[in-house]
Each structure stands twice: as C-alpha cells, then as structure tokens.
Image (cartoon, rainbow, N blue to C red; front, side, top):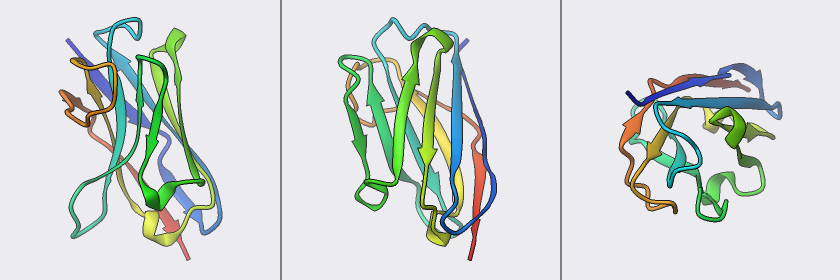
Length: 123
C-alpha cells in the first residue's frame, strides 16, 4: 500500500524558513516516479508548487516560488523535501505531497496524495 506522509509545517514569521518532508512508502525511489508539492490556501484552488522526477532529477517550480523554494529527494530515505525560504504571508496554505508512479518526469498526473501539512506565515 502506497502511503504519503507530510511533516514540517508550522507557524513562521515573514522572511523565515521551513523545510517540509514527504515520506513515501509502498514503493521504492528506484522505480519510475515523480513527486510533487501542491498547496491550497483558504478559499482558493489547489496549485502546484514544485516537482521532481526520477528520470534525471529535473525539478520544476511555480513562478511564485522560483528562487525561494527548493525541492530535493533523498532516495535512500524515500523522502522528498521542500525547503522554503523568504516566506511570505501569501505562502500560507495547506501543503500537500503527491506521487505519480506512472511517469519518471513531472506531468502533474498524481496517483497518491498525503493529507497535508499546514504552513502559516505571519506578517
């Protein structure tokens, strides 16, 4: 059974940093996969934040986090991280991790989702 578990959310001040973790089980990172981070703010639709594909480790970022967030993968731990720096109040949202086990590149066609972790950025 595939499971996706996010952690690392919390309350941080504007300009601060957080590192989110996405622990995946039920499959191995040696298999083709792509892991994406998404977020959903209150009253807004879910949006893609970043993604990393297993084919060559290529990463993708939404324009609004470019230069501030960094996604990385630890294959030995089956864990993907999202390092978030220079946080802004508009980054406040529930952050979700999701896995695509069909593709090795980021097509944002996710098969499995975690339950999310809340990030709150105070002004």
